[in-house]
Length: 445
Length: 148
Image 1 (cartoon, each protein chain N blue to C red):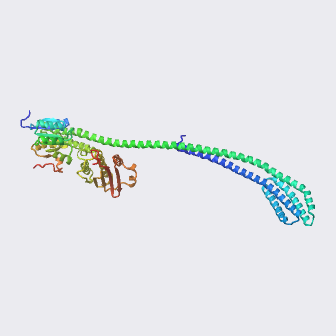
Image 2 (cartoon, each protein chain N blue to C red):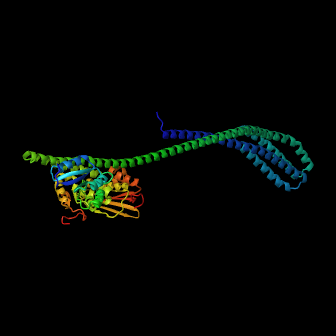
Image 3 (tube, rainbow over the protein chains, first blue to last red):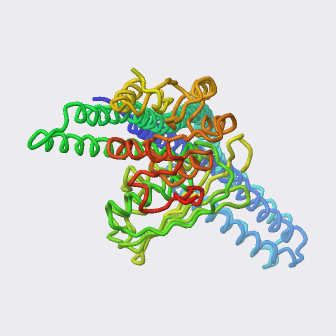
């Protein structure tokens, strides 16, 4: 199977896109894990901190109760109540924070009655003091049970904290691993992107260079084609001129000599009579007819007037013969006293007029035509119009569908730096050619 | 044998076959004698000056110097010698240019067999002549009338 440049580009593009998608997906998953593990680390740190908060809240409860018991002043009782509420709230928060961890949940469950008992003890001490118990006795009782109650609490909270510290260590390690993976993947992805960009730039540069080379080759080929086309037209003109001269200087002269020899022969064997005379007469007429046909052919190939007297008289001569042959009445408007133009310009304009009239005869159905030649501002214009059926718009809009003749006209005009336009409609067709009026000396006429 | 009162004709044409045919055609009659031939306009002018013929038959399209230019040159040295132009060109412009240069008659080569004898006889009387094909449309005021 042979891959075209386009299908190869599509395949490579698809592979690159797929690789980007894979790398992107893995990067997304890794970064997601990293964020997740970071959240867990944060959570674990928060749980550890919350454990400290619970311990602090408990200490605060103890301190406020002791202050009341010691002083008997009721003002710390408000703070005590708030401290108890705060302790319970902190415990609830902690409970929610470790809800995902059954071991920690169990520890919290273990902690709750311990805390309740401690609070109960503090409440009893406050109540005892309020009933009038002595400060020293109540404090002594509090101190007596304090250690027994707070040690288990500290033990449970330490276990909770230890568990969180262990988890924190694990989660930090996981986070670090995820961070490394993410870094590696980002680096690989970036490297891949850089490689793709460089490769793309190189390929683009190569493609642009190749395209530039192809365009240059195309331009060169078009130039060569135009050059060839110009040479072909020139060669065609030269060949026509050569053939016209061959016919004129060779065949036609020989036919004229034959005519003279025939008349001479007739007079030498004369007086010819009967069938001999008839044969002489027919032969003479045939020779004259042949001679005329050769001359017409020669002059149509290359009108001698184009060399001897110029474009205007050559066009008039051609139009006379054209009208005789086609029955189309052609009105010619030209000036008599123009300076002579370069042979290339005169030949091109004559051939355009010739081609346009031929087209009128073949395709237009018009019984009349007009030719105008005008000069001014260093340019010469030729206009050929008819009153025929016109060229269909779709044909006129597609150069490839125009005949070889019209394209030949365009090429002749282009080669001489001029322009050709064709207007056509139901009213007829008008062909306009405009060329620089270059004189015989190469200067503007 | 050349008759003493024959017309001496110079034939100027670059085609040898036609020069030979013209000589054969004219010399059937003792009235005409081809005294010289030239292959181009330059030689035609030299031979005309040297031979001083009674009549010159001149082709138009020739190398080096064409028949119109040669006629113009000959007119300067032999103003009265009739020059009969021979050409395949039948355009009014070419005919007018020939008469402007000093030609006395103009024969289109396609009808040479029909017109030549009458043409040489007419121009030898210094009267203008145009081939029958050209008479339909009088090409240019430069063509003199028979009365001129």
